[in-house]
Amino acid sequence: MEELFTFLTEYTEFFEKMEDTQQEKLELLLSGDLKKIEQSIMVQQAMDKQLENKEKARLTLFQDHGLEGKTFRDILLLQPESGKGPETPWCRQEWMQLYDRLKKAIDNIRYYNKKSQEIARSELIKTGADMGAVDPSSGVYHPDYGGRQNRFVRKI
Image 1 (cartoon, rainbow, N blue to C red):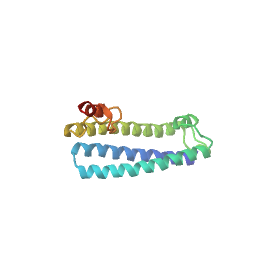
Image 2 (image 1 turned 120 degrees about the vertical axis):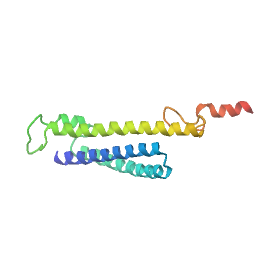
Image 3 (image 1 turned 45 degrees about the horizontal axis):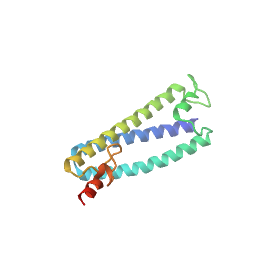
Image 4 (image 1 turned 180 degrees about the horizontal axis):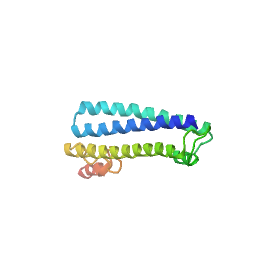
């Protein structure tokens, strides 16, 4: 379990770093500095690749420890309530603190992403670049969204 706790600590620290990056990206969107926004997007893409690799490593580690299909929460519930032993140098409380840090980071990342999407969508609308082509449920551009093609068909 020591290897697992060490990995999950590093995993949590990575998500906390992602949280900081997402907060910076939101601040850059608010500033309107396009060059820095572009750099932030490149950093985000690199972090997404790192996250993909960390997630693969997590799945492999869980499988190697016979914990395939288990969540972090499931694993922390397997830890002793108190006291430490040779097999488990950390008690449930320490696992729970780590879990809480991870959950907080993920929740904040979701919040910052949502706010960033709202700002980006708002800026598109302000500039007229939106033209009804951004799906408000996903924030993804789609040329057919909002009946845009239908307006052209009616004119012909």
